Length: 389
Image (tube, rainbow, N blue to C red; front, side, top):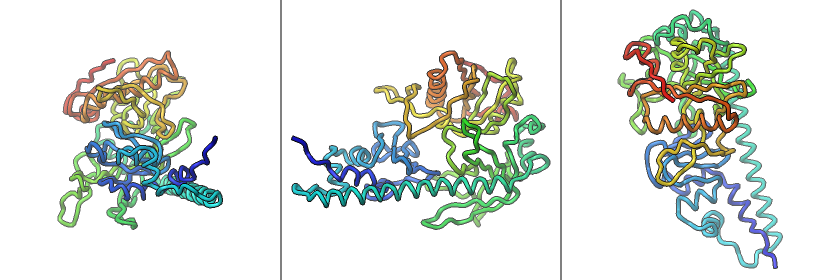
């Protein structure tokens, strides 16, 4: 005996994830690129929980709330079984559902899914087009605020050693979304950086707004009262933003021909500091910026009783950086201004992922002093770089 397929399966999976988040009353999530980031609805925190608006995959870095679709999200947040989650999303299935009604519901679900996929693709294309347009407006960085900014960060004379991955924009708008409207908070000079995929195609634009009058040279967004503008968590608005998908990409600052060594930090300034310092034996290395720790590490296994396992797990919904095949030695720079155990575990996760693809690869983690990043050390807070496995 066979049972008819439940048309609600397609219907539930086709539901708009942002609308479902509202219906579940998950509080405090903010849109960051193509994700919703914020507190976990089960264990709290600030930004440990994320939901992809495109794949609908979700994950908490601390608890077991993770999955890949709308049904799993309802099951996890409301502690429901699969059938009860399906009932909650779509309503109960009539015991004598007419086959024509079942087909009608499947057709509507398919249309919803195609509409959402079309919208997501349209948004991706829009972001790429916007990024390309901004990049084309950019100018060579030499002699501009970009060069003066790098000088302020102790990186004098580094530009001639780099690929053409940095540009200067003289008047770039800084936009925030208020409700359904985009509002311009600021317009001014910015450093542009191209984030490239493994196929060396530009996939994302990294932007850093500059103000050379500020200590360190980065913009501080201020209100009419002169005080820094803060978000709902009391943190200053970020003046480094990406446009497009950074996952799996890197800012390829310098790649000498024939090298087999890749040195990578999260940010441009950290990575360029490593280039300036050039430890013995690293003169011919490539220097790339990984944009952020999550991109360098990728998804990490959850092991009971272990907060940060340091072991990778494959998740097609969360692509991440892996080094090209020519890399035989991979060096990650570990900044000391974030939680050390978590940071080291994530970097170990990224190295282990690379070694699964290339067992002969040698991986190193280079830590900075606690409370500082590598650029802090360059500009005088300390001068010692300690290397560790």
